[in-house]
Length: 168
Image (cartoon, rainbow, N blue to C red):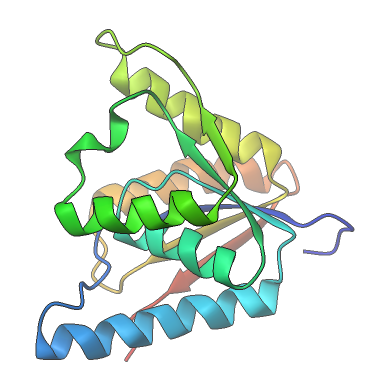
């Protein structure tokens, strides 16, 4: 990104390794190292993310530890209630580190997907770069998500990044 103020919106798939098993710990460390390398190379001034899965939450934590101002975006109250216990613990830590939190809607009356779309659009609009962090085993639904955003935003001149965090 060649701009004075590098603002990056980060989206991740749901395949990030948990460090619960012998092999999981190694893959987890490798994935975190890939994300740290990516963040250091891109060196954003600010990161926006919707911490809805482990990769997004870990990216927020790693960004904050690198000194990058990071804004966590929640579509509505209770959005994070469906996270796994370990992810909720990580999110609590990320929220503790970050002093920037955006709540897109104060109510949730059956419009969940609409609020999630609004949150994604908000992150895309405020950023001048978009990063898609994925596993080499990403599901087709994430590929479709990436394509839908990439096609529209490539025309707007946003810098697009894609990182496969588990290449080994």
